Amino acid sequence: DRFMKRTLGGGLILKPEGKTLAYRGDEWNDEYTKLYTPKSTVTEDLARPLIATAKLYSDDKDDPFAKGLEEVTDVYQFLRYTAVTTVIVNGDSPVTFDDNYYLVVPRKSKKVMWLPWDLNWSMGGFNQAMRAPAEDLAIMQPSAKKAFTRPLAVPRFAKRYREIIAELMAGPCSEDSMLTHIRRAHATVKDALAQEAKRDKAVTAASEALGGPRGGRMSMFRARAGDDVAALEAFATARAQSVNDQLAGRSKGRAPRSRSGGSRREAVPGFQVRDVLGGTGALDPAKASFSKKDLDVAITAGFGRTDADGSTDVNRDELTAVLRRFLKASRGSDRIGETDLASFRSRRALALLDGDDDGAVTASEWKAGIERLLPKWDKDKNGAWSRKELNVVTLQ
Image (cartoon, rainbow, N blue to C red):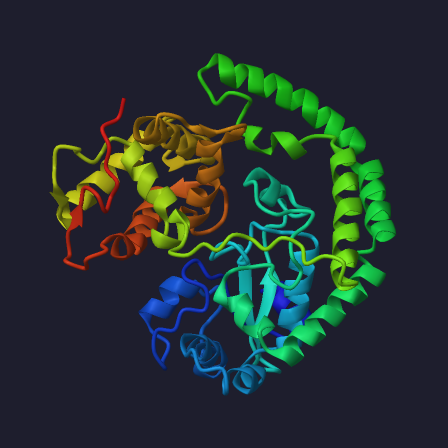
């Protein structure tokens, strides 16, 4: 809120956690609140541009789309957001999923703007971990999601977007500039990285001795963890070459695979939290269906079972532990290659449950977070939840 007031003069702040730019009617309602997660007070005049933007995306007609979008969205700013996200290859973002970004509506302009959030896996880190295009990601097809494909299908928007990328490559995202900043940052933090590596080694050894995840809870970052400046330098060089080749017409790059039908994350919103609940063992696998009363009991019992240290709140390590139990029972392994899947998914589960973003989930936050997701898990909308809808498994 302070950043918003200081830079844009204040306005509406939203942190979407559901289908990107979902349209749910012409007036702000509870569905919008659930999907867009307001971080400031919603007023009619500031909600109107967001709703109008979502409505444009819900209509497949191209004729009014471009003109209408310019009236309610800061299109130039959106194109810059997309260009930077694409050049630095930040796949852990709305170009892939439905979260990790903010939408804001400044009080002065009353036009929707996109702001980044969670950049720790940029510079190709997320894409490399997921075996998706990284250094050679297509600049003109950075995403298969409609939020990006529709604007980039408008010729004048695509032309301006390409110009922005060229400007970035001639300035802050050039190979020389990127390498200079990587090396300056490395010189600043290398001693701290060395000290952290020693601490992490000791903590990891202790954790493994106590039955914790192999490689420690940060093992999913193995390929880019620690003092790996060479990997960043190699990425910056390869990415600059690819983008410049694409701008010159020598290459088209590699487009991300279409996520038709959505990933599990898109098809089942909050599946990480659902599987946390499953990992607590509070859901009886012998039952074919669960009522709301059944779930109320399971939610309460599940919190107590997750709070292993009895601290009256749940941290990420405790979420990881119950997810690990669930994954071993449901898919036979808690890893994909070098990636610690339990640790990877616990990050998202914590973000969905931790209402005040303090790194710990209280009993009330746990209950509120799960209850907010329950309607999304009830696929047939019959007011009950089947064993399949809750993905209940028999724990080992």
